[in-house]
Length: 300
Image (cartoon, rainbow, N blue to C red; front, side, top):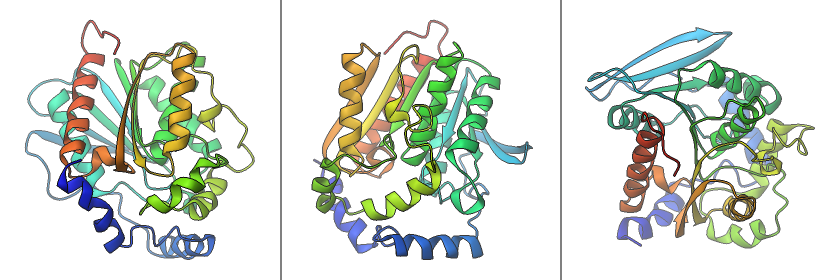
């Protein structure tokens, strides 16, 4: 591990990154605060000069569009940002999707989907995301991190059922089994300075509601037949990792076309963090998106 990666857990603890998730009560207080003081959905003022950012409203959703200035986009990435289903896109998300648009020469669509405190649920958000994906210009890549990874995979499963799969589904530390029932999560908890099972359960229950056994809305249970190529990243110092590893084992056993990157000792969403390992992961994602949106679109 790089020095930056080894220091990252200390940084997270110093920032008290898990303060909103330590207990269900912490989550409820945070939800109340977010309701009273909504986060901005606007893009950052500081932007790359080689991209253009625009937005439009569609059926009540604000959808951001990031496009390269140099040439027409060669495809679409529909990006679902993480944030525990309660936070808007963070600066790290905006930096990443701007780079992705510029270097992969694609348009990136990032919807500001309804969050839990605004009434957003898996049952209402996922079908709308799948609809946006079906309407998007092809080739199409579905991509998401953390909570957004769950949405992206659910949408990919819906597209596969409709026999119009994405060219690639890329997932960064995805929340896969929203029941959080894997006993290995408890064993992993002391190592994770960011996510806490108690708080995540409160959020996931509000998001998934009574649909925890639904194989589309709880994508860990989904049938991967026809889903197309997948690219998945996971760090082992993450309570979401045990489910990711199980999911990848099943996907491999089922003959799915999957490329899996597991980084020992790394944190949740490590590909979005400012470390050498994160930079390598971002380069791989750019390359994979370029491959998926090329004219030949080879499998991974």
